[in-house]
Length: 275
Image (tube, rainbow, N blue to C red; front, side, top):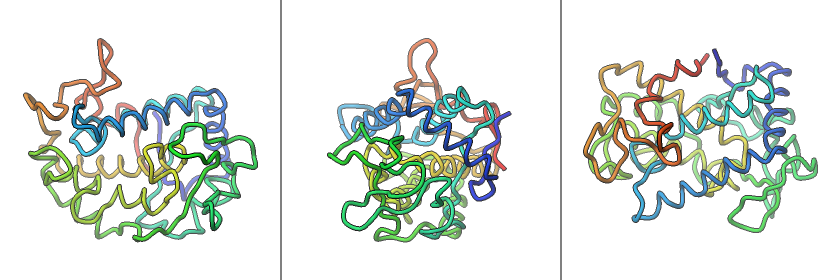
């Protein structure tokens, strides 16, 4: 069983194995396929001609759960022992402490062009060229700090206190846990962390920054915590909803005969656990 750990508790060997696996998935060309998928999904989710699947919609959480599972499987093709660690941004809040350390993600970008200059994903290593982009920068960029602070534990507690998963109109204006955790109601939570990191994390190509996986693993963990708290309050909507993915509808791009539905990923313990 895959076990996802708090990045602050990883051993030096675990940090190295994770970084090495991420870089190897990049070298094989697979990493950029994940970046392209996210960029495409994000752009389509902003287009009213498409049914939203990954953002500002109920399937935000199951879509990203499947996305992380697929990426984790690629890491494990390199090293079976690797899992995606999570970044608990309610406790690891410094711009200089973990996960922004030289043997994990490296630090903030430099003044001016925001280029990350240290760590395994610095442009100077030659291991992390940014090729799927929405601008002309070939290097990883970060600001760390931004305009808004990281969400606090009390912000998270307020989201976890909401007993209903989602509700009409099933978008960024919907009441409920999903939309609050995604960051469209109240404190921004998920969205605010993307802005706090800055650089590519504030763009549709956010997976260019490996912190994307650690951030979304924590968002996924919070969903798992909520599911445990409200075992009788499941995914909504369940059927006949024209503008959202229902419980047993497949989520693009995982469609067709072997498609993936929200129902199939509700029980995360089929795939991994958190410690």
